[in-house]
Image (cartoon, rainbow, N blue to C red; front, side):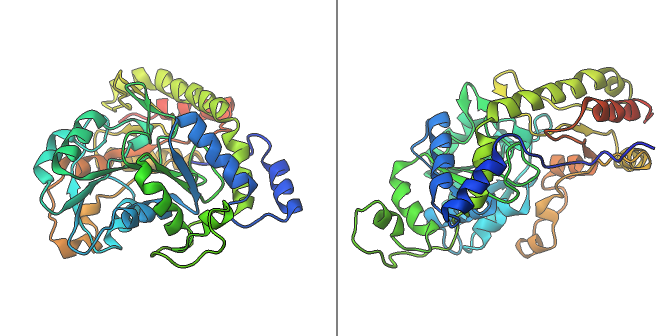
Length: 378
């Protein structure tokens, strides 16, 4: 009997264990030590951004964004209805009202043609999410935000090292957030980063991340003692995790190339099957270079998806669906959102399937998945 094929599996990619040993041996296992700085410098140098700060999670990087932008009760934030709950929670924690926008039926990203009507005098930020590592249409989104005086925070949890019209994702908004959760291309189990593209926000970001103290300035020798100067929390990543993360970041281009090969293998092998079964494959606009984060299929109906998942499960292959519409969630009822307000989100959520996709997915296991899919008749 074949071994199960999981949906995701974490793995070593480089010198992670060597770097962890170095971190522990040096006695530097708290935050903002050698490997934290190396991770940040690598991100800053590769992406060409003013500042990167590694954090305990992408969720916390989003929370830092809400604090940096001074969200207050009654402020509004425009967010796609098709995203993870962390995207909205970070702003709701500050008293914001979410304004959910529907997604495009092709890329499954926030629909830029619908965003303009959602701005109001209370809008403080727009948060595009680069779904599956494929860029949102950032040029019109950035223009809309500028016109209305709102900040842009890229939720780039899926999109590290993807590009939009030649520009790195995460470098386009005022702020951007990254995830290094175990399901991501590059991981340390739990972790994230805040990318700061607006230099005016750098110093305060360092303060917020260090519990509201100016500790970062103290360690740079700019002041002789540090104190409480602002609100904040403990968003600093342990250097043990940063050591693991640096081992992965060092070989990011190899990881991306490997995932590209696996993504293309799925896409080429399933083209004919998908066409015959009215199943939609991912759409990548020609001006977008995706981050090779996931491979998904859109089944023709919810019932077909249920049968498809059962078909795979019977053959010990784990595939999963994705986000439920946030505007229809139990917590969102307090804002009186209704079914039908984001119809594409509601439809896609019922039909989407994510296939097994991870760095060490073997050719043999991927061939098993493909063969199993090709045997399924919608």
